[in-house]
Image (tube, rainbow, N blue to C red; front, side):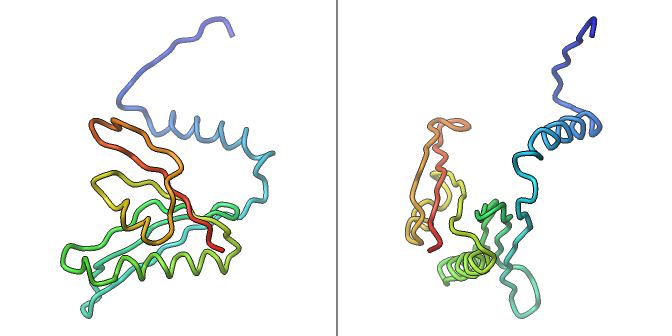
Length: 141
């Protein structure tokens, strides 16, 4: 390799992103080969079938990794979020998960997750700007 050109861009091509993902996947495979991985979601729908809350996550090995949990403004305070979280955790546990991981901001749902047994393991201050981001875990038992 004679010359390397470095490109910093805010519009990376799909091909370049795919190349990096492929490279890291190739590197990780010997260490994580055969590791159980699947998506897991839970939705709450009203009588018309409209989604009024939902959780999007993935199971990776023996961990439930919650990406998003949202409840509509009209259903907040009615136990919808708690029920969604409980059902997702139960399903993850039935699939062999021993723990759950998520992150939330100080303006989101930290007290909600604490009420459900999650503990802060790391806090990023001033992230992204003048807010706190919490990484939380829970043993599923």
